[in-house]
Amino acid sequence: MIALLLALAAGYGVFLVYTAVSLGWTGLGPGPRAYQRPRDGRRLADWLVHAGLDQVRRGELLAVLVALFGVGALLAWALFGGVLPPLGAGLFAASFPLAAARARRARQRAAASEAWPRLIEELRIKTTALGRSVPQALFDVGRGAPEELRPAFEAARREWLISTDFERSLAVLQARMADATADTVCETLLVAHEIGGTEIDRCLTALVDDRIMDQQGRKDAGAHQAGARFARCFVLIVPLGMALVGLSIGEGRAAYQGAAGQVLVLVALGLMAGCWLWAGRIMRLPREQRVFVPLPAPAQGGPGGTR
Image 1 (tube, rainbow, N blue to C red):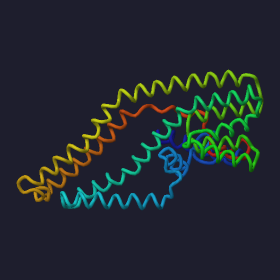
Image 2 (cartoon, rainbow, N blue to C red; image 1 turned 90 degrees about the horizontal axis):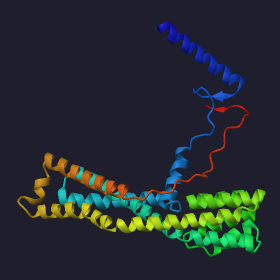
Image 3 (cartoon, rainbow, N blue to C red; image 1 turned 45 degrees about the vertical axis):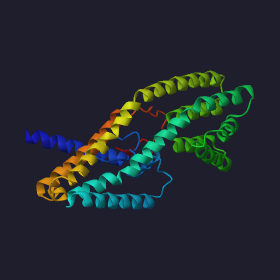
Image 4 (tube, helix red, strand yellow; image 1 turned 120 degrees about the horizontal axis):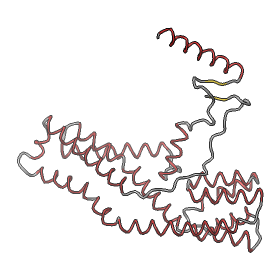
């Protein structure tokens, strides 16, 4: 058995050496990957875009998180004393800006999505009935877009004025919006601009109908969740209220000073944070997945590449 394993290892080693020398493959995989996985920096940048923090300096964001951590820790120390409760409360308080930014970004995306049917219809009219070029029609429509979408259109227009490369301009628009509808519209317009065709009118009309149906469904789901979202606030209000009441009963704050009290307070804070996040997750409406996301370019070198 050992001899068989050694033979397999030796054979695979010869294969790796041969493919590295003749084909330029690197790594330990049996073949090259079609594309590189996004690096951690790319993933962080995408997360910041979805959270609405892409325009915030990371140093400023870190300073705000540290300040809120200190405020939360001081409040918990005033209530419970010790070390563990302030640490847990500080971490929980530091998560508020991130959660608030994501919620604000979600509201902006919802408000902007309501304008997409109108924008797509204007695009259809300008490119078909008025006979304007696709780039001109797109940037004309962007001037009348909602305030949340205008910076993305303006960045794409600047790229067009500098490079006159419509594909690069659309890539800028897609990156700034990070929206599935924007991806679909951009890809449709890119095809119409590069190879032409008479199907753009039909495609944009179908896309308008699809966006209207999607918005109506999301509005109905949000209306049904109104009561549950209000009840979610009690996940924080009720436990904190009980903790304040406990300060005035018996030994009050001293009851939390023992080792068992400190651990129980930390567990309670963890349960509060877990229930808050869990409730928000199960009530989150599914976001349409982006399909037309540009993949990183494969490594150069003919048939070679990284495994």
